[in-house]
Length: 560
Image (cartoon, rainbow, N blue to C red; front, side):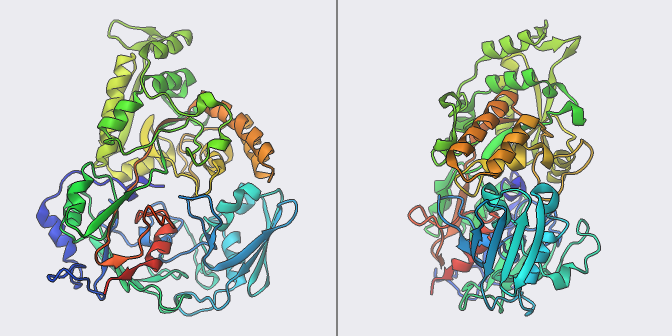
């Protein structure tokens, strides 16, 4: 869930965009006769990390998009756009024991790594035991053992029914013959990654990188698209211009005027709001968070001051969805919302109510119109990434709305790396950011990954790979309810646990919910077929979607 995959900066010169497209010898996807070229590279927006640095380590915060899905795979693919059974990738089937503490996974036969070595159950066991995953501490993994070449038995200390996606759909399979030789996974850049996915790395420059079809891929005839070039662009307008010209084939990005892009008859678009957009707050003073946002009353007041309707209209041009403070995705997850009053966050601001909350907590409005306590005015710094235009606009609106409620919020932009470092180490007050929506019709994974205290660390220490509790939130009531939910396959028991969690997080607001983010995907439907569409949404469609991107690429075909 990383926003580097999405928002790109304000305009670059057209010449820079043209230069980026000239980085390989491939012809554009759309030839002069308007027909597709099956030998051409499918060109993908690589995200805002420029210059590009070769890092395909799936555990690295700056991992390049093609690593997650196109190269490295999970056992199964979970389609987050629907409530449906997962699809086997290298896994064929799995079964829980009666109490949910043991999962037996059967693998597909004949699978190979892209270097030609056999993929076996020993590799799967190694992947689960690998220190970067830390399953022993996070989920209580007792053992991961291969009982034969195609069977793995995962044994846990507690039931894991509700962790199904985390275990089977979000754990990257890595080859033991490569990663057993890695001294330090935190510094390993994995420039020649060995995975089971449909592609292998061909070349990397500071402006683009190219992957080509994996000749050892298990599905005969796939991928039909033999070359994919990921182009680095740190400018929104440049990416939009290339899409409009039919010279970029796949991008997940915010475009306020999508009709301008699709008018060429080459590019189509789809919008699939899935992921919450929020204000991260460094909320936990006990873990070292500093600032007035560590006071729950300030967070509650800011939540009331936000005019979500205006933000949706002006920053996101009405492409976003309404968010629930429970973090259940509506309408998909409606059955998990315990209190109807928490179904949707307030859509308009209530400055009077915000002021009442602050005054009850001992704050008083000063002559300057801002609330203060013990001589200290509430003044919060809100950062967003330079070039994430919709987020930057939303941040400015929040600053204005907060001021009307007597809360001073200074909205500024920073470069991607500063943003990433701040949230990883907890050295911030407020951040415009996103939450990774769940890949199953159940909010559990958000509760486990973003709210459970076991997935965070003290300010100044970086979060472990694959953990997302940037707010440093820690609440033993929430932790207990998360454990209860993980331990049951009974829907009523799970609903009761979620009711407890929701009561706590709706009150505490470590992440202040704003909208369900617009997730626009633009794709070349003239020269390539097989894309997810509204009538066949077989996968989450943006190019940056971890795991899903590989699943989509494997299903594409050039138009002859």
